[in-house]
Length: 397
Image 1 (cartoon, one colour):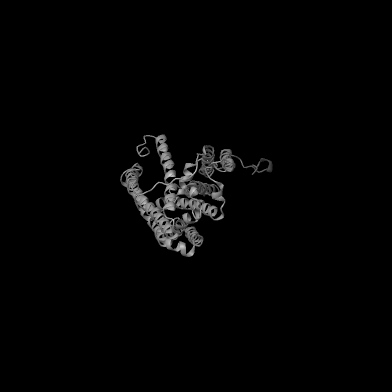
Image 2 (cartoon, rainbow, N blue to C red):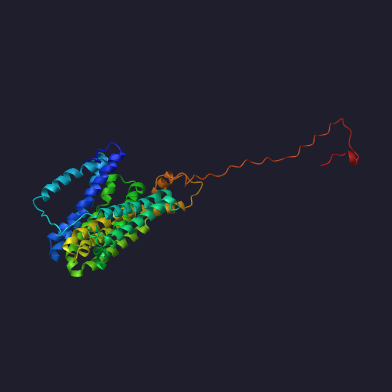
């Protein structure tokens, strides 16, 4: 409500920050409740499958509803619409969910929280600054270096504190650490893919917001189908095998997009790529919680669930920033022909238009035409003049 009714940019940013803070509390709590409530392996796999399917369905509904609200009402309703949904879910959850607490004395790791938060913000800010100012600016490397140092300090603090925010035993497990790393990379690729596909659909193909949202339906349908049908396969094939297969299918769908041309169309390349990536991501999402929360102590369930959400969100922030940086860097070295008009219809042209200092309009130099020096014509002799007969009296030519 605060962000939707914001009168200025500062209030909008504050409201979005509150949304992110409460979402950071909600997402790991939901996974922890599933892990604690469903103790049987098969029932837990089904529950995580339903969770992944709901994620895909929420993404589909969000894209369509966002397109409808943006095209026919206002962008503010994209924020207002979350309030009645949250109230309805909260009222339905109160009589159903049961509280569960970790045993023992727990304290908040305030220094660790400050270090990891500022470190991640500095890293994301550094990539975003590189996209705007380039890699050769001191501010870019200062932000990235400061972020890495803060994250290294966070690891040192977590090793020495008695009540760490992130116990290192949670991430040092080979299977669990690999699942967190895969979640980070998949989140970076997925959000970057959706960003550039949105550019392509709305800028290159000229889709309106509603039509662009409907174009993403096969992507969400693939996630829902794979998460629903893949849940029984977790116990049969094992989560590692299914996660590897899902990652391979997602990579295949991303490679299909490399064949895309500026005016290729939707049905030939974009639609098959969306279906493949949706199926692969659905299989990945249903196996990720099973791998990350398998065999973990009850006291560490909340931390592991928070790591799943954190890696996805950090990947979603770093991925588009890094890919946008590489995109702009590629445009910097792309030669432009001087006789063509400046392109402002494509994403590349829009980025060039925003950076007039780095992409000046090239014009042909205009040189003045040299004047031809012609010798003066000799005057014809007057008929009454005498003829010049001697060589000394004849005019020189």
